[in-house]
Length: 316
Ligand code: NDP
Image (tube, rainbow, N blue to C red; front, side, top):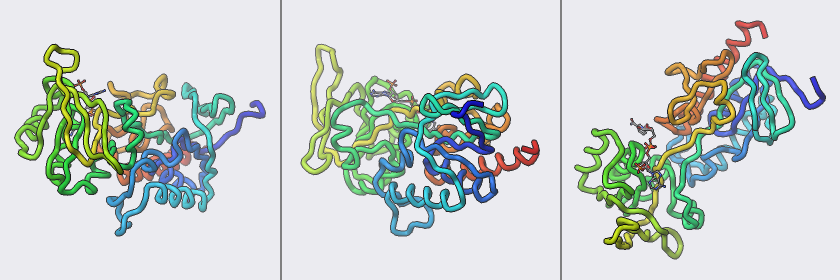
C-alpha cells in the first residue's frame, strides 16, 4: 500500500439523510466509518426551503439546519466526516477501492453508496435567479407553500403527472407544461391529470423564462416552437416546478454495480443489498419512486445494519 492508501471497515459515500443515517448507525455499531461528503455537502435538502414533512419537527426545519444536525450526530458517535468527492471505484474484488478527488485511495470491507440523485433543470438562467423563490424540483417538499396559488409543472412523464396531481390538491390552478403533443406518463396517470378540473395541460409548450419582482410571478412560454404558427404566451404563476427527471449519481460504480435502464442502482427489493457482496446502496441513488428524506434515512439505517452483519458474518 502506498502512503496515499488507507483502509476502513465501512466507507460511506454521500452526505444526505441516507449517508448520515448510515453513519450514525455504523458508528454506534463500532464500525468507525469514514464518510465522504461529496460535491454537495448535505445533499439535495440543502437546496430546498423548509422541511415540514420529516417527523419530529412540528415547526419545520431548514434543510441546512437538519443536515448540520445529522452531521453533528454522526460525528458525535465517531464517524470520520471528510470533504472529498469519490471519483473512481474498483469493486472487482474485496477489499474495494474508492479513489477520492482523483488521488487518494481508500480500501474498504463494506461500502455504502448514498450519493443521491440530481434533479434535472431546463438550464434557464431564471431557474437559478429564482432558486428558493418559486422554483422547485420537489412538489412534495414545497407544494404546501403554494396553497390556493397558481403553479406550473414542467414535464410529461409519471413524475410530472404525479406532482401535478399532488399540487392540484393544494393549489388553486396547476398548469402542466408539456413539450410534446402527448404525455409520456402511464395511462392511469394521464387520466388522473386530464380529468382533474384544476389541471390545465399545455401541450407543445416550452418555457422561455420566468418573471417577477420578489419571486416568481409568471412564466413566458412558447407554443409550437419553430412551426409556422409559433406563438408566445405568458401565464401567471407563483411556483414553477421541474419534473423532467432525475439523474442518479451512480456513474463511477456502474462498471460493477447493476443499475436499471435509467441508471438507478438495483437492490434486492426492500433491502439496500446490491449485486456486489458487502456493497449497499441507500437513498435516492437506488430509489426512483419515493425520493423522500425520511425514506432515504430509513434505507441508510438498513444499509448500516446490513454492513455490520456482513462484517460479522465474514469475520472482518
Ligand atoms: P421521464 O424520463 O419518464 O419523463 C421526463 C419528462 O420530462 C418527459 O415527458 C420529457 O419529455 C420531459 N422533459 C425532459 N427534458 C425536458 C426538457 N428539457 N424540456 C421539457 N420537457 C422535458 O421521467 P420521470 O421522472 O417522470 O420518471 C422516471 C421513471 O420513474 C419512469 O420510468 C417513470 O415511469 C417512473 N416513475 C413512476 C412513478 C409511479 O409509478 N408512480 C412515479 C414517478 C416516476 P418527452 O416526453 O418529450 O421526452
